Image 1 (cartoon, helix red, strand yellow):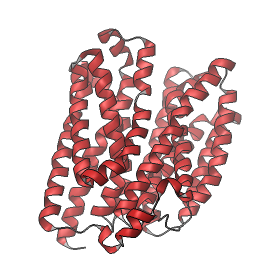
Image 2 (image 1 turned 90 degrees about the horizontal axis):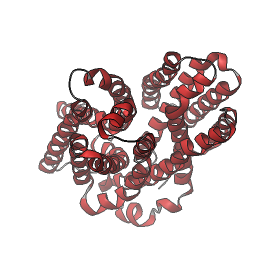
Image 3 (image 1 turned 135 degrees about the horizontal axis):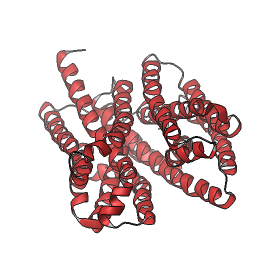
Image 4 (image 1 turned 90 degrees about the vertical axis):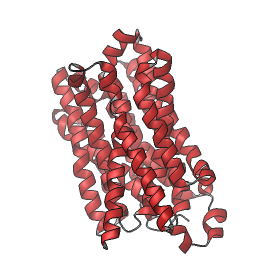
Length: 396
């Protein structure tokens, strides 16, 4: 690898890390400060619930329209615009009252949805020979930063105001915006070619219909069922633990085990993909990990920490693998962009119903048994979609 290439890759990875700080943390920090928001802004518990439910449909909508916007305005330009909206929204939403909090949460969630879909083709274009490394770093940074920010925002609030504790993370989005601007200007100056130049334009742009592509739907459902597990577990795992007799502190450790398994999964996945290990086997193993974890919660509750870690491992593996597949299973930046947008739009729509439906089942029955049975069945179904999504042929 030449010195110039190494420098470009380093700048890209730094940019991805800065961007990742605000890709999940503005959402998860709301849960940590729910009681503070209730006291400071007079929000009811149901209003906090609506605030927490807003991001997922906006993630789906952002992913849905991202390919069209990138096609119209350019990939790098949309990355810059989206990051700018994210930065302004994170910095400003807590200073504009209740209306501003809700409106800018919608704005930042939409920006995250755009960035979710555009980051994979951006990596494919600017690091075509280091897709596994760049995607692994990005996914790992999102996971670690979300857990870290959710944990430290409360102690930070004891030193500064809650507004500063919640909004100051937007500085990282500003830095990411500056880095993206630099990469865009450098690529223009150096005339860096995109992968699309090696592929006939008529094939990639006119003949590829992502919404009519069977393999794309397999990937969308595969990622969606995984995301359903993630958001369900993130919402209810402590409650499930307490229903089995754990106290609040012990139940919180279940969530910690779930989060801490992610870095292990991402490191291992990046290592295997770089060595051309079978994608189908990886997809199946990750699916089995989720199914075993969900079944363990239901039938062997004495090992709750093991099952939590196993689901965290499987979920992080599937999410990161899905991001990599957008590049691995396409032949151009444009088809990677279209595939990423479609799969993530489908995935977040599927995920949206997880906490809603399983939470309602709990309310109706008074126990988590039926909810966990449904979750287990869905994870078993996803083993089949893992087999289908992990096939090595190109989707375009």
